[in-house]
Length: 58
Image (cartoon, rainbow, N blue to C red; front, side, top):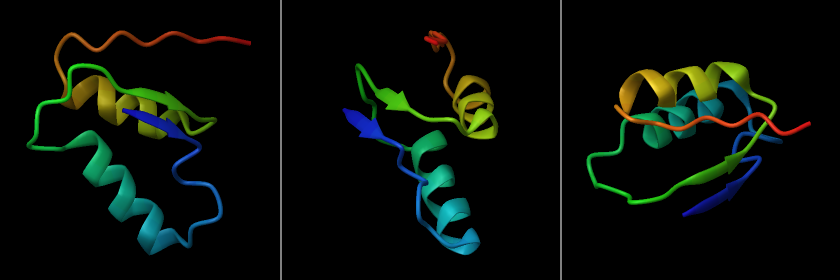
């Protein structure tokens, strides 16, 4: 799954909704690539999904 800036241009309620869906999905995804500047989203995914590999590319 590839998500490129999934929260960009969303209003606050929808940002929270989408971030929750991404971080707490019940369906197993073998690989998810998310490009984002949203550090809080990255932290939520890292906390919710054991074994998450986070790479910062600048």
